[in-house]
Amino acid sequence: MIIQTKICGLSTLRTLDAAIAGGASHVGFVFYPDSPRNVSFDRVAELSALVPAHVKRVGVFVDPSNALVEQAVAAGHLDILQLHSTLPGRAAAIVKKGLEIWGVVAVRTRGDLDQARHWDTVAARILYDAKTPEGTLPGGMGLRFDWTLLAGFAHRMPWALSGGLDVKNVAEAVRVTGAPLVDISSGVESAPGIKDMDKIAAFLKATSNL
Image (cartoon, rainbow, N blue to C red; front, side, top):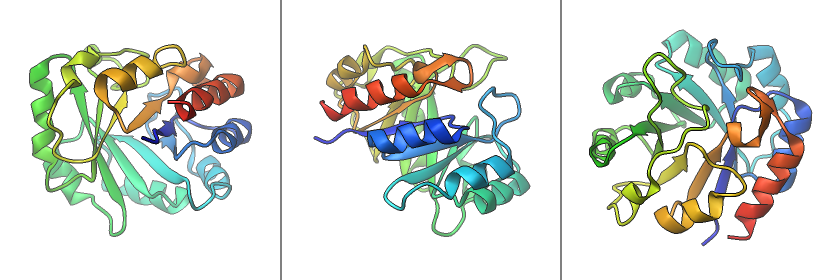
């Protein structure tokens, strides 16, 4: 099985180049002011223009307004909207023609996985991420959940795994969960929001060998 990989929170030309050169299937741009990975519309326009057609551009949002989504889609020529802390009903109201929705399910317990069913008619993919402490960022904090919760789980739609991944544990994560797509952000950084080209290359090499 070919494992697809999303490098999230990109904000520089050099790290975008590293992601593309390494074979990333998706690149993520964060549109959330409280995140150290937040990008401006001008910067994302510059970056997205360099993304080849076979690589999907993912906009990462936290319960966004319609205006924010429209501006981000226009600037970044986005293919996918990844929605954190967003109710499925709200997500349905901002679906744009031709764009995929990824519904994020925050996981701490087995019962949290059941939230995926609420996305059946809205999302094209579910992203399982670690549930973060109240009052903190909803993702990108390097936290992982118990991957064995996903072992044998009957997925209702395409899905992806995020949360606490790095070059050392991604093989185990895929072995335990069977994830077809992995999503990494802090695991390829030297500091919050600062992507490391060598770490990106190493992670993508590791996933290509799975």
